[in-house]
Length: 278
Image 1 (cartoon, helix red, strand yellow):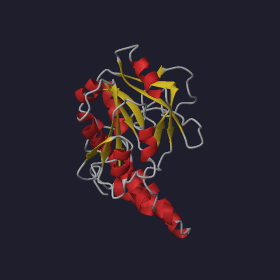
Image 2 (spheres, rainbow, N blue to C red):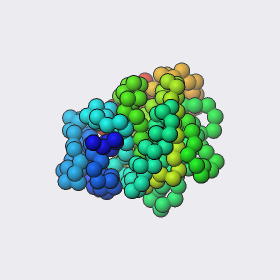
Image 3 (spheres, rainbow, N blue to C red):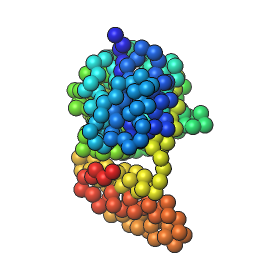
């Protein structure tokens, strides 16, 4: 029996999903939670050898991960974005690192962008005070305050202990919230730079102005919700004013992409919770 199960949440991810599933080593089970895709995501995942769970609707990323985790019975869960690919040694390196210390609840690899260059890790969540970005990629495994949900290995018992992802967060910042709650519960997070994952960010579904609006709406709505949840003082009035100024400038320049982005930010900043617009 495998020690780890890979969980992928898909939403109109047909263009990248087969590569993600195929990057998982033989013998490792893969669960794909399909969030009511209107393309061939479910068929492609099944053809690649994954077990497909129909979410019955677009639940969002966190709730989709929770559904996949509930169907797994392995020691570890590997959460993987559909636009990400594991290198052959990644899972072994992450699990080996976690087995050195039972206090490590989750481990993450170094993410590489589409050009194969490292994405700079964040030292902290966006819900912490202080400088979030690291100044350099560490050469050795190190404790860290934030791990990206794009590729995250976590102990299944710990994931269940803290209740998984907050299902009220439809999209974006759910990994910030998870990492903060893990640390608050006394658990540690470990970045393992030797482990690598290719991450073609924002390619899991076709880009459009609608998707730009949604991305910015949900990011801001999640920020509003999490500020209230964790008692974080954020000047959302200033953020709204800045978004309005940028919207006016975008209209003046007929930059319709930035119009969509800033309209989404303004809409999200008005939200009292994440809002489940799809």
